[in-house]
Length: 386
Image 1 (cartoon, rainbow, N blue to C red):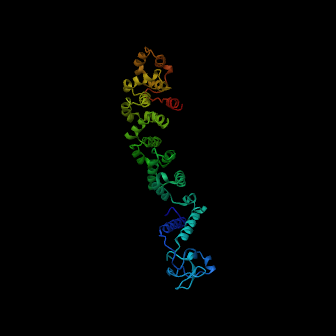
Image 2 (cartoon, helix red, strand yellow):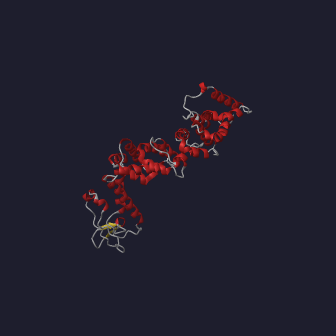
Image 3 (tube, helix red, strand yellow):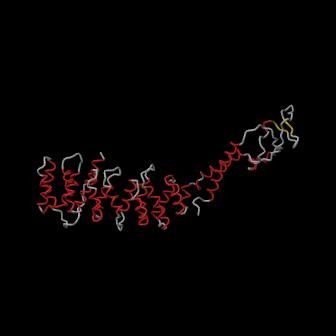
């Protein structure tokens, strides 16, 4: 089935033919007017539309004929009396200029008729055709087509073929490109498509585009039954960085990585040496909140740094929660921190040691139950929204 109804095809054809006729008229060589146009038509013939564009010229070459006193020349072939101005340059039966103007105006009027407007057409178009149009036009897809596809994803069930190909188009929209708002539209629609989009999203995790990787990871984090792959874990750890995408990927990534600490642990440890301060801090915080006690010697030096007085606001909120997650394993580092010259570090160390000593201050959690830092959003908000 076609996306565009026959009526719209016809008016588009009229506009195209009109353009070609005008183009042909411009390319016709300009000659002197020497040919006889033939007998004059009766007045009522001009009321017939075909008479505007069609003619039957005599075609006799009047060069060398002598004009009379009135300036008219009589054609020896048909006997017509004509002026120099009425003579023709060519013997073509179709008048390309007049025909081109009429066809173009007809097409323009038809395309602006309410019943043939694109917003009316897409409502009756099949979903498969709309998806093909979006796939071909990509970022140039008309807004009406995109809106109709979005509505159908929300209200109807797509076939497996439609879901797969629409997912490919939406995943392409996740890229960092010049089309404003397309990634914000694509993210919730990919969530609506369900597991059919997962294979395409998995491939996007390996993309060279940072934004595409992060938005693909956001969609996959919302899948309840999805088991994270190594590419997913890498994308989530990468999203802990201090980037331009806001706090969503860092804050959601922290919670997700804590829940999947068994498969994320090695990636987190390897990024404790990251050059990005936020990624380094959050990797250490996740290991602490997930109570990975065998990582205490690698993570505690980083957390102690952020318990100190520095130029980063609210980082101590995250660090305190992580140190508390390490429990007694963190005590040697805290006791050494009490001897520090940094007043904020001493104060934080004393508070944390007091929590360790006073069981009443301990969180009511099982020893292996993870903690969830509540300062990630606060950390980002203060350091980026100023």
